[in-house]
Amino acid sequence: MHPFLTLEHVKFMLEYISDGVQIVDEKGNLIYCNRNSAMLDDINISDSIGKHITEIYPSLKEEESTLLKVLATKTPIFNREQTYRTYKGKMIATINSTLPILNNGHIEGAIEISRNITPYKELSERYLDLQSMVQGGDTTGRNRATRTDVAVFNFEDIITNHSEFNRVKAVAMKAARTEIPVLIYGETGTGKELLTQAIHNSSKRKNRPFIAQNCAALPSSLLEGILFGTVKGGFTGAVDRKGLFELADSGTLFLDEINSMPQELQAKLLRVLQDGIIRRVGDTKEHRVDVRIIAATNIDPNVAIENGLIRRDLYYRLNTVTLWIPKLSDRKEDIPLLTKFFIDKYNNQLYRNFIGVSEEVMRLFLNYSWEGNVRELEHVIEGAVNFAEGNTIEFMDLPPNLRNYYKLHIEHQIQEPITNHHLPVQGEHFNLNQIVEDAEKRAIEKAYEDSFHNITQTAKVLGIPRQTLQYKLKKYNL
Ligand SMILES: Nc1ncnc2c1ncn2[C@@H]1O[C@H](COP(=O)(O)OP(=O)(O)OP(=O)(O)O)[C@@H](O)[C@H]1O
Ligand SMILES: [Mg+2]
Image 1 (spheres, rainbow, N blue to C red):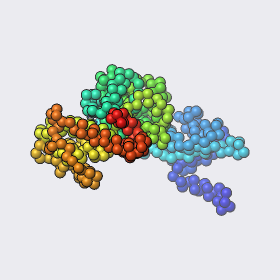
Image 2 (cartoon, protein in one colour):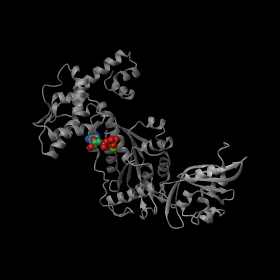
Image 3 (cartoon, rainbow, N blue to C red):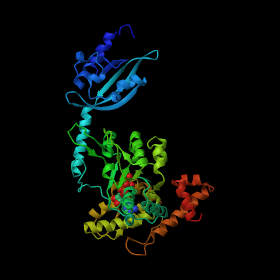
Image 4 (cartoon, helix red, strand yellow):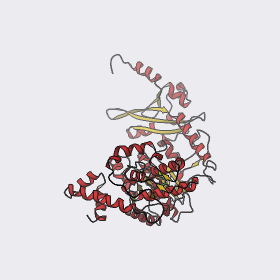
């Protein structure tokens, strides 16, 4: 230690830091406790010094004490969350780091630094209480007649003409008849939730609960309580709360954006997948649940694993059935089809009579990047059907970002019109698919020639994945 820095200085500093600090000797008797720690735990410093830690905290079991554990193992414990009641009955939640004090390998004591997180705990419990109330039923989760988690979509509602997506749909239909967990990968708005609901609705669990939870929508401390339930939190006086695993018992639980689930929770999820056993947060009892898990990620699972976002062991458990939904710009044949579908849908909803989109609009639709995929297309059409005049959706009825895209990327490439005039979206004679396929075939052919039949290079030039290219080369016999 620096000659200026005496033990008195250190003690002085310990009195003014905002964390609680306790030091015990090698037997577990308290030898130091700062003011914050005493205030937090409702203990009287002079009464407690010299007493064993289990005497100071009568409700603390010996095996639960981090200080005693560190004395026994000589190994530090970092950031361990603890919830306990003081002798005055106050509920406290802390995050502790506990370190052994060693002298030549010989244990002389242990020091524990505790941060008070009670206010955050209170807030999160209040949030859980409110959520239970909003979803109907009492805080145990019973009687949830009004809960919003319902699966409404079926396989017929998934519109596609794309052969790869149709193959994915066929695999999903088969998977629906099994109990195997399913992993779905697709960019935002490609229809992951749609597919999940369809699987649930054609499984034998269709009349049982369907619950969807987005793992990215909640902070991790809340997510654990939501998924696994909690016991007598005590912060808000609420009773035990079932988690979604218990609420989805005998049904399906959809875990969206699984890549945002913290690693420790993924380990707990793996346990449920392996043996169907859950334990509520703060509970010692275990419950058996029968839940079919469908998980989704909007980033490539391989990338997610590489970046440590999805645990490898969990991935191996989930990937028996992996459904990859192609993005909309890779399934151009679906664009006219979905355009018609959404125009019909919003005509019905809004009592309008649109018959289609103009030629220019369809050209834009076919060439646009559709970062938001089908959801973006649906919103564009919904907006136009709401506000456009006449019976055809025109260029001016589209949002500015699409119009700008057209001016920047498409307008100057136009050589010939796609069809005569307004594209009918109703009727049988519509052969835009053919036109699109011809154009696509020509583009691929040219890039393939220019790249001397090198697949990687061709895929790069065209800006499409290798797999997609290989599939298309086969499709067009190139
Ligand atoms: N093939 C399709 N046929 C009909 N409607 C579709 C199709 N794909 C998506 N939709 C519609 O697009 C919207 C988005 O679909 P969904 O919510 O399933 O996407 P998602 O992949 O879960 O997106 P996110 O990753 O953003 O959650 C929904 O309103 C859905 O009805
Ligand atoms: Mg979704």
